[in-house]
Amino acid sequence: MNNPFQEQFLKAGLVNKQQVNKANQQKKKSRSNQQQRSKKAIADEQARLKAKKAEQAKVERDRTLNKKKEEQAQKKATSIEINQLITDNCLKRNDKCEIAYNFEHRNKVNRIYVNADMKSQVVQGKLGIARIEGRYELVPLSIAQKIQQRNDKRIVLFEADLPQETSENDPYADYQIPDDLTW
Image 1 (spheres, rainbow, N blue to C red):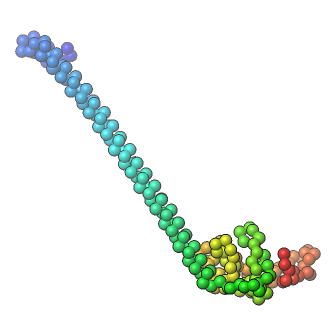
Image 2: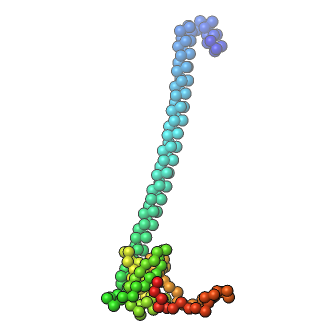
Image 3: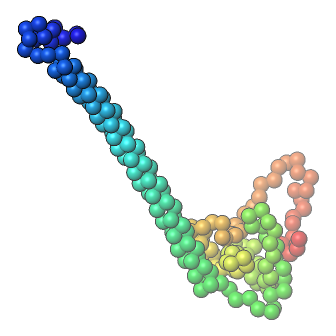
């Protein structure tokens, strides 16, 4: 017995040995219950923290998904707006458009059939070439610039011919490239 008071009570005859043992057992039970309660409280706290972290992660994931959906909706709206601009303002081409005009767009050489007047306007930079649903259409410069502001991957613009600087050592500096050259 570790408790000096219990020993004194036993010697005085106020308690018997069974009562002392019973008190010690109750004391042990209460200690183990407290330990179990504290372990349970720690486990509950950890579970609460995990749930809170999971909730924060879910909120963040939902936020990024919503942002991605909004961006996709914005891109779709812009694409529809560009398609509308092209269909409303494209120059009509007919059977008289027999000249194949080759141009580069997104590292690929593409072809559009135009007439001589359209070709000269494209070369001068007065017309732009716009892509809609896998095909190309001619649009006026003002419309082409609007399309370029919204999505520059859907438009091909040619700058008006500016005098090009040539180096002194260029052996072909005296030779001009003809405007009617078809490649």
